[in-house]
Amino acid sequence: MTELKPISKEAIPHALEKVERYRLLNEPAEAESICRDVLRAEPGNQRALAMLLLTLTDQFGRGTSVNDARAVLARLDGEYERAYYGGIICERQGKSQLRTGTPGSESAAHHWIQEAMGWYERAEALRPIGNDDALLRWNACARLLRDRELAPRPEDLIEHPIE
Image (cartoon, rainbow, N blue to C red; front, side):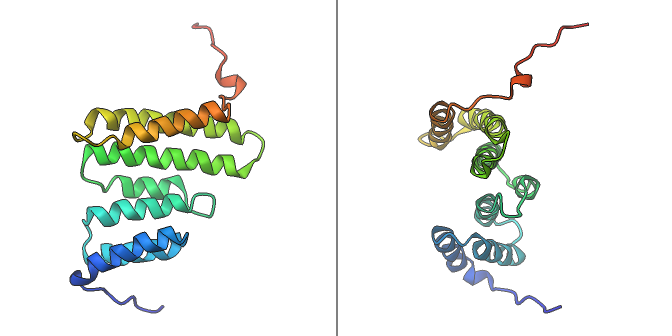
């Protein structure tokens, strides 16, 4: 196997700029690779971790799993960041479900979007002053549920009697 070449710590800011560029070009695998190089040089780099999480969610439906993204989520330091990015994971998984168009995908998407909204509500309570990102994401989720008329599976609506 070919050995990976390490990047210098001085190159990290420029490398993270490239991550943003590759994400904008819809090349998340390249962005992911750069994030992993940055994290080899500086394992606790919070910006690189957040960007890695985003590149992984960019790849939902293309071989990357929710568990991959949640493993990165656990490495984020702040409670707000974990709540906000927990919402991002669920929201993007819900949208990935919608893109499949398979039977049951709309109810699965409903589940994921509802879970995202719960994460965003937690983030809202923890947000720094002047940061309404979680509210913006919550509103986007609410509009998606409303506009697409997403609903839970019928069996999820059945109330089971208490024995």
